[in-house]
Image (cartoon, rainbow, N blue to C red; front, top):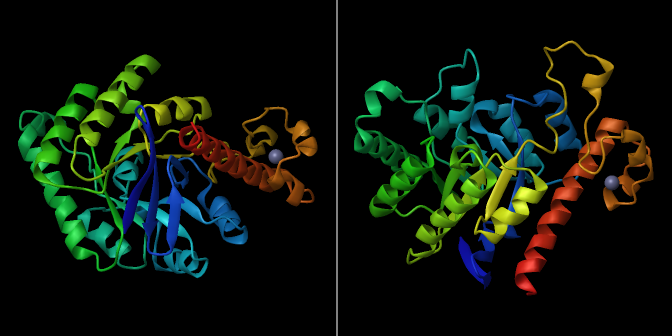
Length: 312
Ligand SMILES: [Zn+2]
């Protein structure tokens, strides 16, 4: 694996990253797919039948068959650990570090995020180091159990910014991950609070002797992504490109079927969109078209952010 700095512009930076056959520049966006908000089967089928190669999947949603299908498509995948689904779903299945390692070894994933399970807050809140040492052990166990090259991300689990920063400092003293992954929603209530915490984290990471990438999880708001990139975020992921697709269990109403594209909520206007995705998907159904349009829009946005940094 190679991580080369192309350009640094104040706090913003652009890297060229090469993992196996996967080469990309940062800032980078992984469109996410999860059973949590998506109609997983619909999106999964769409992903397999279209020419798009980079996604974030949760290990929780994958099985041997799905992993095999993704491998056939030569897809570059950032694998989330399943801790999120464990936390958010009402009746999650059994899920632990060994389940994660099993999924990791059922295929090849270019990037893998460590497990961030829901700990008993009452018990563990008092024992900050105990909790963090467990997470560090999980991370090390995961790295040593995977027998192929991958970019390993350490997941920060705290919910309050000051605790996140404390956890990050502690972690960096103990291990040297390729990247750290932090949920955007835990970095503060207001936008300016989030920006200031992101800058603090970026500074901490840039003081390390080798590059450690900053992955901001669950962020797909285009305007925020521009600002966060300028504050030092390297990798984003989010459900925004497809999350309006209804869940399978919900009653299908006409409104529920409609996927929103980010340019306009008036979907009739998409007929006249001149972007590359719309031009080549003219005859497709509305939802198929809007998925392609949104993916293309994110790709375009990120390459414009990269240009902004590199050509300054
Ligand atoms: Zn379009």
